[in-house]
Amino acid sequence: MAAPITSLTFHEREYSHLDILATGHNDGSVTLWTWNADGTPAGMQAQWEFVEVRRIDSGEGASEAALGSVTALKFIGSVDVPYLKRVY
Image (cartoon, rainbow, N blue to C red; front, side):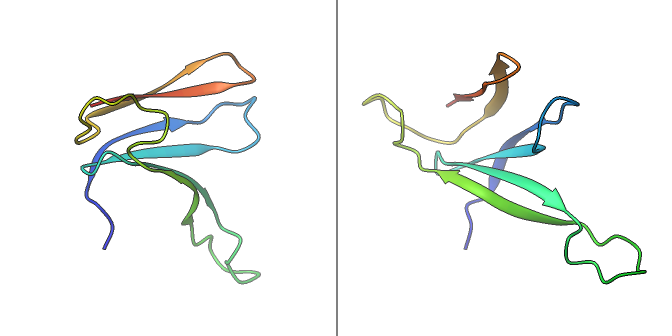
């Protein structure tokens, strides 16, 4: 069972090749998602689905500080290299 979502943010820009939704979880992990309607049969109304791009575990890139629930997320950085900031 997936950890409950405690925060989320979107990275949706006209210059981005892939729109991203980041979800923070109560176990300290972050999951990056995108969405598409690729599975929609031809001639039917779009059926959107979320596709997991990557899951970042709680200890990845973190210090030795105790990690808990991710309470806020924010994409920051340049146009070419967005950076995701986690707040515990």
